[in-house]
Image (tube, rainbow, N blue to C red; front, side):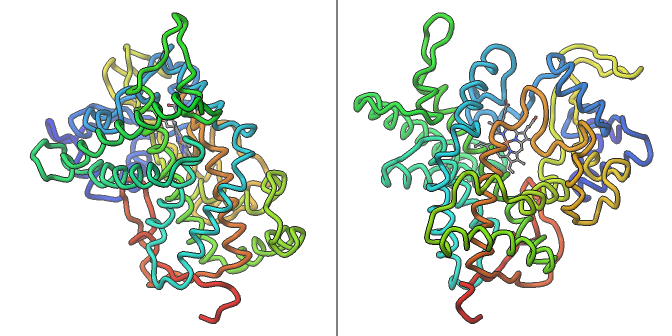
Amino acid sequence: MGWPYIGETLQFYSQDPNVFFSSKQKRYGEIFKTHILGCPCVMLASPEAARFVLVTQAHLFKPTYPKSKELMIGPSALFFHQGNYHTRLRKLVQSSLSPDSIRSLVPDIEAIAVSALESWAGSGIINTFHEMKKFSFDVGIVSILGQLDDYYKEQLKKNYYIVDKGYNSFPTNIPGTQYDNAVLARKRLSQILSEIICERKEKKMVGKELLGGLMNSKDEKGQPLTDDQIADNIIGVLFAAQDTTASVLTWILKFLHDNPKLLEAVKAEQKAIYKSNDEGSLPLTWTQTRNMLLTYKVILESLRMASIISFTFREAVADVEYKGYLIPKGWKVMPLFRNIHHNPEFFSDPHKFDPSRFEVAPKPNTFMPFGTGVHACPGNELAKLEILILIHHLVTKFRWKVVGSQSGIQYGPFPIPQHGLPARFWKESATY
Ligand code: HEM
């Protein structure tokens, strides 16, 4: 458990968290305890234990986030809750992001992808992660809010950027600090969303996208959601969508860049679709995105290798016994996805990037890049769709070269390639 009060916080933050987890696992096995950021924690590195906490006994473990983060995103966002309110919100989010709902987004996502790629080509060295964040934000906006006025889009972007910058800074209300600026920007985001809601109500433009679903929802007593509840969930979903998808996309570009043979094979798969679309003059179809078999395996293997959500947090709501171990009430519980994804028992030669391993389905509960159980990611189909579309346009019309030879990992807080993967992009027809 480390030192009194600080526990093992310093070790956790001063070394690569993956080294911290795996050295503990080697020493103590698949279940061990520690003390981080003032909280006693139980870490679980086996598929059965992850299932126990997240699926079969999920009611005994509630979601838990630092208060400052909860306030910044919005306390009514679904992922802070469990029980009836969570179930109600989750149904709305899930149905707005289901394959049936997102299939009509293909042309919008295509337009965003092409415009992003065009802007990178010839722009000199870009920070891949930062650009991927802009891409996933734009896709998030269109899928959550539908078609939106440029004025509102700019306002949301400007203020969300300030919130994003302050999210991981030290929580204080001293004016002028990043955190305080972020709190003010978060208030403005709520106001902008209220204006959008008001305008849509007036014009009777309540659509089928998430905002429309939230505006139409009534509880069992016929009560609608308040504007604040709607805003917290819109910001929450945008937040859950942006850095996650951008980190995975950045890793995919690195893995493809580092594996030229694989890149050629992906290119061949995508060029065949491009040709059948009259050399790219016809739009991509939903069915085509469902038949990008190799590219899909590259995405799965990137999700496994990068395991950008290395673990999740819950808190025991009662004393719980698991396989003879006592998990005391109030302790944090952390299922360690990354350790499971990198365990040679489930994925042979786990540090090798090998998409062909997904020709066979992984064993149950050993592959959880989108989590599992009642809080599993409702945006996973959208994330995969936008990644497939971006890769299609990237490899059929553009090329890219990673700049610099740094091979490290940066945590912000998700793992991403060092310095956000600086790279140069150009059109295939142009000479570099
Ligand atoms: C590759 C990209 C993504 C990854 C790896 C990812 C991963 C995850 C994981 C692991 C969880 C579960 C966390 C937990 O159990 O504590 C989660 C939850 C969630 N994700 Fe994603 N996600 C991605 C993209 C998205 C997108 C694009 C959206 C929405 C458009 C989204 C919306 C959400 C929401 C709303 C939750 C909370 C669900 C709940 O609490 O019921 N995610 N995500």
